[in-house]
Image 1: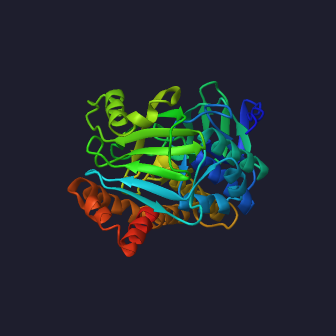
Image 2 (image 1 turned 180 degrees about the vertical axis):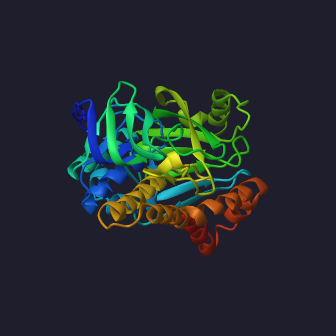
Image 3 (image 1 turned 90 degrees about the vertical axis):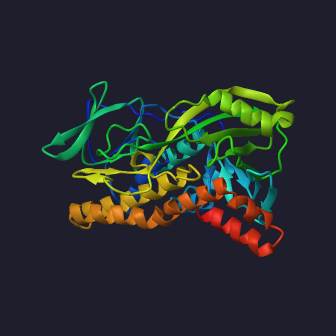
Amino acid sequence: MAEPQRAGDHSPAIVHADVGIIGAGPAGLATAVHLGQLGVGRVVIVDRADFPRDKTCGSAVSPKGCAVLNALGVNEAVARESYTISGLRLVTPRGHDVIMSSPQDVALICNRRTLDHLLLDRARQCGARFFGNFEASHLLQRGDRVVGFRGTDGREVRAKYVVVADGAHTRLAPEREPHRLIQAIMGWWEGVPFRSHHVEMIFDALVAPYYGWLFPEGPGRVNIGICYEDKSLERNARHLFQNFLDKHYRERLSAARQIGSWKGHPISFATTFARLTSPGRIVVGEAGRMTHPATAEGIYQGMRSGMLAARTLNDILKLGVKPERAFREYERACRKAFGVSFRSASVWRGLVVSGGLDVAVGMMNRPTSRRLLARCMAQM
């Protein structure tokens, strides 16, 4: 993909908007796109970076995520810049190794530098304005109601409603119970042999109940990483990752070329949906801890919650629904969209730790068992 022009606009000291969005990741951008699709005007997005910008992420877009991209009208543009996925190599903690393949493409790997920029292009086509290099320092309030936000450089966005979409480290969401984190570290290589159009998920005691992965970003480039729990922050991420690579990828990496350095990042999650709104404010994506507790997937949940938030704001701004009622419906819609899947995470993690995943994969010579496991994983 050719390097696009910088996307940030020069902004005046004060900008007025119907909706101001803090954070231009998939959650914030999906909100902006869908607001435009619904006919809501005066949408402003800010991000601490200018675009295009890099983002540490495995960059996998699940089947559910592809469906959301299609609803946002950007699926074809993203697919042209992605590596298509039609299958999975799964390795269990006790060493069962199985391949599950589909006759058609079911998922995508799209580098976040590309994915987020394409979503931003789509948001701007739908009428949103974008201001890069804008780090929101605090919210503006009138009484108990949020009425905008101010940047560290003094610029302000004054908005009827503010969408908080600035990810795991947000300081702008309503106070909740202490968050829970999944730790992740990853790297990129060229020249690693892999089965074409297949991702790899390796469940190993080193990182249980989580996993390591290999995601191909193209015919010659892959990202490999691990996610794991470390509640006390006592584990050395680099040592753990090196042990994982030595155990599972030593031979395949022997002739490969590493690109750049390893990068780590935390993933914030919860299993409940509460405090996603307050007067004048609505929270989407990882800022609302809507990341899958078993797979650490966040792109789909971010975009889907963004679309739900956009419908909520449309109901208020254009249809006259009372904000209190609309916000209650938003939290209910998030529970409906993600609740069953998130609650199933504890069951999945139990299977990984107890050996149940090995039992399931050991039955994979039965076609019905293979289809059932593939369907369960796709729906998580």
